[in-house]
Length: 169
Image (cartoon, rainbow, N blue to C red):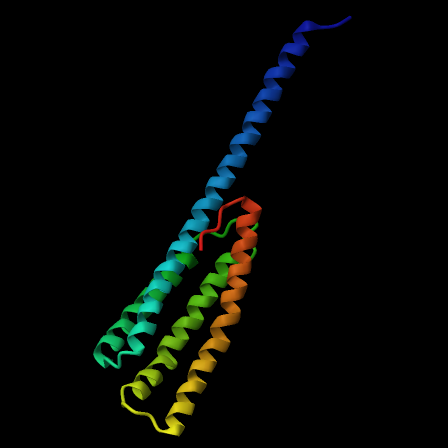
């Protein structure tokens, strides 16, 4: 014989399970979106100030360049600390770690290489040796930063694809 009472319990249990699964998925997506936004916000703020420094380097305005360098250094340290405090979520694909690594390399460059660039560019016309020295410093910065930037973008894209987050460039 068919028991009507047991069929009544299957539907609500099925609905509870389906609703719980749906809510779990939306919570996971919401967490991933917030995680992504924190990382992107920190990186974009640093990127904007880094571009400002690049623009100023062409001006030879040493006080403005040094002020921007100091401002950027403080921002990099703050962003790095903020990301270190951010709890890593599952399926991160090294997204956060690569963001932090990028900031650490930038911080090293800001402390070690950019003061040398400022010193060289503020002298006025450079001789051949100084020009070569400047080019070597810029090449070293590019060699350190560019591969990390590419790895970071790949990791970000993989993360966003996994969580179906639209990547804004």
